[in-house]
Amino acid sequence: MILVTGGAGFIGSNFILDWLTQSDEAVLNLDLLTYAGNLENLSSLQDDPRHVFVKGDIGDTKLVSELLDKHKPRAVINFAAESHVDRSIHGPEDFIQTNVVGTFHLLESARAYWAELDEEAKSDFRFLHVSTDEVYGTLGNSDPAFTEATPYAPNSPYSASKAASDHLVRAYHHTYGLPVLTTNCSNNYGPYHFPEKLIPLCLLNAMAGKPLPIYGDGQQVRDWLFVKDHCGAIRRVLAEGKLGETYNVGGWNEKANLNVVNTLCEILDELKPREDGLSYKAQITFVKDRPGHDRRYAIDATKIERDLGWKPQETFETGIRKTVIWYMENQSWVANVVSGEYRQWLNKQYS
Ligand code: NAD
Ligand code: TYD
Image (cartoon, rainbow, N blue to C red; front, side, top):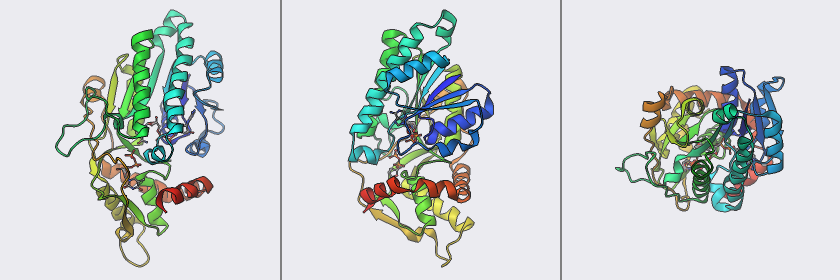
């Protein structure tokens, strides 16, 4: 089996659902169930013996060592993290604790487990660390996109904590020979996305008749990748990635935030027109900018395409339409997510 950490979050749960459609290899899912973890994402696996869920912290070395010894996974895929930049600005400590200290403890547990494996299992073992393009910092409009050789220059507590974890993963390969792989991916979107992030937040606010908050001038650029494509890239890197290497993963879909939100509004105008006949764009509101807001991220995904033959299947236009339809059709998931803690966050961030 494989051990997936953070498998109740947005990307981790998509990864598990996707994995089990492609393979019968079981998944042990270790997740602390923070505000971002939601077992409802995995409700379709409730009676599936291929999915084993354990509530716990990647930093709990006793628990993680017991799980590794008991289940003997051939790989660890580390999704677990605090992932929201705005929350890292309000309170960086949890980010240091999980993303840096937690990853360090997870590496230590994996190293001890790996050292005791027999030679064949040892050479088959993989530790795949899921990271972000935000570690590379910010780009000007005409700068070339991030490659794997771009120096790290993180600007937010979130990206700094992810950068630190990437460095630890790298060091465990160079120093101890742990067979690691790292992926640095651009902004994901798709089903089960927690509505604190731009796309699901604006979708839910639009349908609820609330303002669509655009930070600053809305001209910040992100590269967007449909989450299922990210899952495919991770599977490919796990299967064929070269040990110790990093792979940039992106969708070749650079968009300014305002364009993203306008596109969302246009799809909603078509699929679920407002009763007053106005466009959802009427709900767009410019609000105070995020402190230290990175202007542009762009991913050069040539390496993973060239060396591993991976390419995204969705364009932004096809992926975003699927996403809008998913949120329209999954109102009970939405209703359960937007409960107490989420409301408190909205008050703190947008009031
Ligand atoms: P998420 O916030 O939706 O989910 C994170 C999950 O980790 C949650 O289920 C949470 O309960 C769990 N978790 C948090 N702390 C934990 C701990 N100490 N021990 C065990 N579990 C813990 O995040 P996501 O968007 O699914 O991102 C997953 C990974 O992908 C993260 O490492 C993130 O940095 C990276 N990433 C995300 C994006 C994106 O656009 N969302 C892009 C590139 C990379
Ligand atoms: P987000 O989804 O938080 O992802 P990240 O910060 O990791 O890129 O934000 C995506 C972009 O959208 C980012 O430039 C910030 C901007 N944004 C808004 O303009 N308004 C919002 O309410 C949010 C949450 C984000």
